[in-house]
Length: 264
Image 1 (spheres, rainbow, N blue to C red):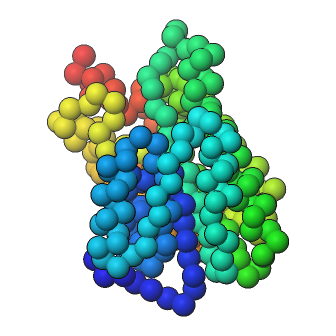
Image 2 (cartoon, rainbow, N blue to C red; image 1 turned 90 degrees about the horizontal axis):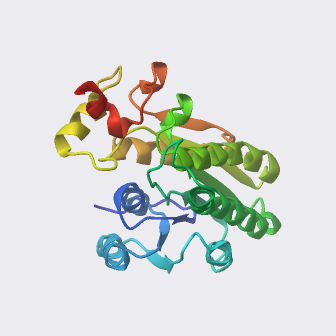
């Protein structure tokens, strides 16, 4: 992995970046010359390993531990970031994804999901914009909210999680309006990318192919979309759906249950 560098200073804070999608984004952006600020909550060893992989190949990475259910802790991460000329990115990738449904939903579950999936991104984006505004246009901000392709075809599985992602999708629009021109805010809505919930590998493979293209989102697809958003300076308030076209004929169950439904 060689580092691809240009003359524009670029840094990005990625939440939940020690594992899964966040790790891939961190590694890919570091390879492209971005200084990575990698947030984790409890996966310290995985975060350190990701940072090691970045540094081993000549990249720069700084670790930030925080519990995003604590809004003040989430905001403190932003205030600790050095402001520099060029582009500063913020990718809200961390997400709480606990199972409930319309019969088991509770205030406690809604509040837990909202805290991590909507409130933390909202207060972090506000703090991010406030730090960049005095330095604009020499410093420009770009925020990416990782939402969910199921918002293009809602179903009531993962009830509290879905409510929180609906709120995050609204945040993308509101923040894009509120913080222009110094910060752009966009979204990426992936469909099934990795195994979801209690899926087996076989169930995941079937669900991942159950769409018009016969292939769901790949980690590389999400990274390419992020790069395109970060590089496209006229783009704001838009969400890119990456789901193999499943939104063209959305199912009435979450992708985690598609194979279960078909075999019942």
